[in-house]
Length: 110
Image (cartoon, rainbow, N blue to C red; front, side, top):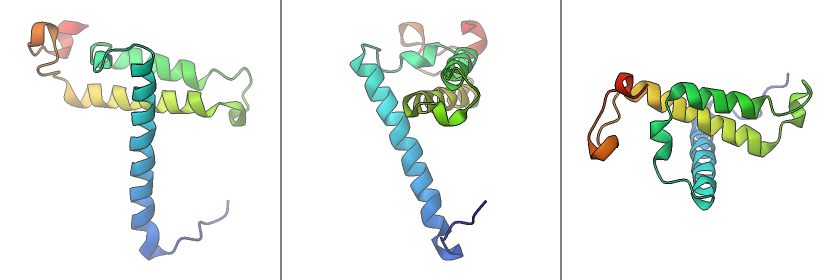
């Protein structure tokens, strides 16, 4: 493994670049979902287990164990699903997005 040519002072810039890449990747996948007819915020109702299942499907979509064959699209979609699962677990309470605009506990939705 080779070291990155970035010096210690530039490491902070790399951290922000990583966050920008992550944010833009999620935004692009959500945009594609909206273009395919998914309602904004509909992912909030699926739960972390479903997001993890879908991430697994995307990650294992390559027929071989050669990870270089995993498409960028599948990698991006898996990443977005993992982010959704993380959000779902961190929130544990959906707030005003529940049925009829009322908040609901995650345990009531599963």
